[in-house]
Amino acid sequence: MKPFITLALICFTLNCFSQNITPKELLQNTIKYHDPNGNWQSFNDEFTVVMTTPKSSERKSIISINLTQEYFGVTATKDTITTTYILDKDKCKMSYNGKVLDSVAANKKKMTCDRAYLYKNYYTYLYGLPMKLEDAGTNLNDNVEKKTFKGKDYLVLKVTYDEAVGSDVWYFYFNPKTYALEIYQFFKTDENGKEKPDTGEYILLSEEAVVNGIKMPKIRAWYYNKDDKYLGTDTLIED
Image (cartoon, rainbow, N blue to C red; front, side, top):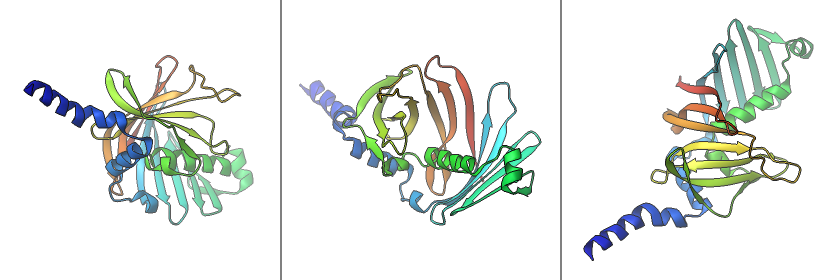
């Protein structure tokens, strides 16, 4: 009987709670892991991301985010070209190799304020995870799934968004012991809102960098869902 009791205790501590955990509990646990002091809501810091892709030179982006002041800036350098996009509340500013551009000059360089907002949404979303899953318009699935991905077990949270926010379906994979976010994956949808299995990408997260007291993924490697083709890697460098 003793071995059975021991086995039962192991099951309870490692598996049973994980099986019964609700989506909201899982989200709160992962936020506690990544942002234990609740710093994201007042995030104000700068960090650098180096993107490497096959058959292309690297791109170095210096990203500045101040959520309370509604400020976002990204300065990206690739080869001999440096572009800067700044959103300071409702004001949009752009520069090319250090020269500030008006709207006409910016258009000639294929730079727009729409792209500035795209960068803002991209960087604040990905580096604000998992905290961004508390945003309005985010819909958590009713259940937490258990999945095995590349030989490792995960707790998986399916997320959809209100139509005004986005149409993609996302899956977030969490370490069942620490609740660290280790993978995310998204799929496109058809006109009926059904997932298209041969679309989208998955992103493997490894190592960690602490920025403004938040544990962020240091390395993000991107792959196509369809054929596991490698797309590129983002590496976060703490400034």
